[in-house]
Image 1: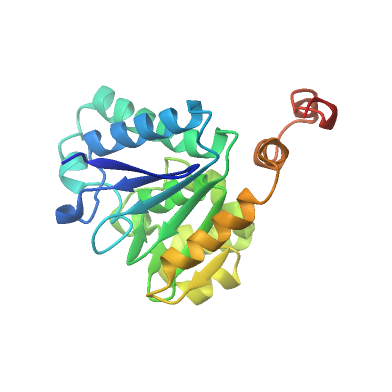
Image 2 (image 1 turned 180 degrees about the vertical axis):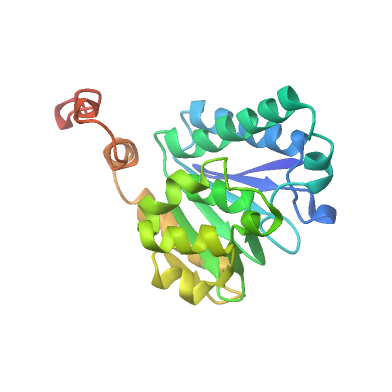
Length: 230
């Protein structure tokens, strides 16, 4: 069975991390297939919204330590793995379609960095989220350290990164890390409701906030599609 499954629900593409026996821990194959799936969704004109979710007990436990354990001392391979992660996560952020992370169970480390690259996040009430890299001598270096301050503010970002703590859904929503919290048995319905709100908007009109709300040089305005071209 594919390590990343694709499920189309009308114009909504679900990208499903499918390594449940490893709690969707991200090895090279999974990262590569996430990138492939997001690239395909970005290039498919029939896809208007993308939902990323995990199969099994959790969204994802983060990076596969068996993979990371094989890389120390192999600098070029480590750099290549990190580059592939960055390229895949960037696709979630840069595609001109809304992307939603639908989070259940746990969203840990590199998985939270993927969720941060999405436009919106919906989280089950009994789930946890965080980047505990500093507790094992690492740093969140595939986008988490750069994206988190823009989402929760610099002070909160420093606290989450420097302590490496995991937080629950209520706290995550309170600091703006997630957009909505759903009952544990209502995550799919809450995600679908958010998707419905997005699809009620004109697809081309959504391109401007998706592309234009990120902090960027003023010259970015020259690249944005004008309302006249929509």
